[in-house]
Image (cartoon, rainbow, N blue to C red; front, side, top):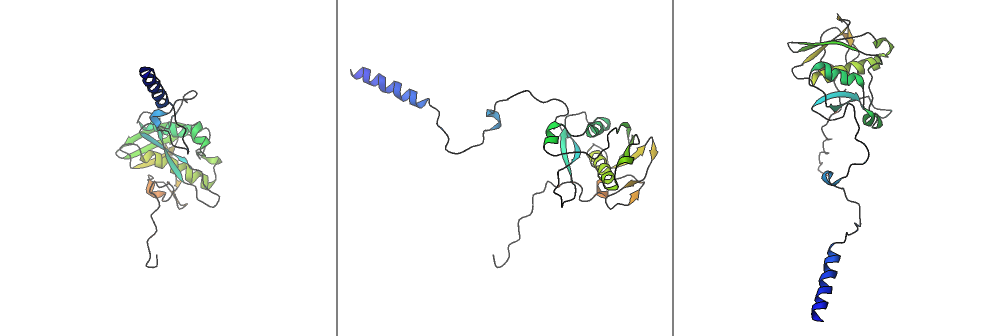
Length: 200
């Protein structure tokens, strides 16, 4: 009788040890414990070591800002710029990211000489407003600046130098840098904490 009682106790303890407890509150599930549902998306994934700059969603009273997103494409200038020209993928579109580059834009060539990347494209910029053109050029400049060895971008149409708007709205025909577009790129720097005052 004692042996049966001990066996029953062991079975009961082992069964209660195998139960799953219900969480009283929500908790995050670590990435390595998550299951994959549905099909994996394809196309220009927002992964990799290369970056392109897309237009971030902005409130009505805010200036448009560029946000960098990752691209898993070869590291040469043509591949990276073509990925930018292709625009946001479906997940980025759902997140509100967009591009000011005009439809039909095609990359003719991208040549690095010294630290200046000379990019020639077809002429489809005429449909853009002056503000949209500044943002589109800023997208190309910011993306080019992330390419290894590039300090500035000379943007041409059909291999001919052009004059392009910089951040303050003035036009220039010199090579462009990210410093020509101050405040156009979102900062990844968190907001600074408030400075304590004597009354706090």
